[in-house]
Length: 172
Image (cartoon, rainbow, N blue to C red):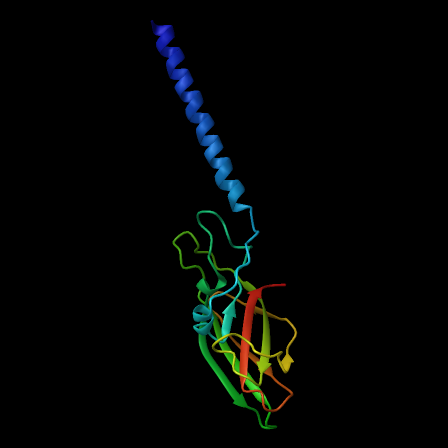
């Protein structure tokens, strides 16, 4: 009788171990998948999009405890489109690295970002850009320590550009 109970307990423990290993493997394997389906964006969603866009990183994504976007770590202090002394459009953007916002993400770490600015003559508010940009900067590196504020500036060498879009991504 004791052996029968012991055998039943061992089978239960073996099944429990097998299920927990399978569950862990499935969770970890789904976290390693970085392929995303591309869908068309709804016009209503695109109309609400701002002039500064954060590209979702794969580097900080994890199944349970990851970041959804670098926008969780970056705070936009100010955003201005002005003309410089020569009359060219100039966009200025103030960014601050506010660090991790979760209780397990408390380390002081540096964000290495890439920034690209596109200037347009036509509006991009409702249906996205309706024409090609008149000027587009190269991807520029931007390094921000935790708690530090950085001032980003881009100048368009073509007069008449009144609209812009800034994209921030992890370091390319």
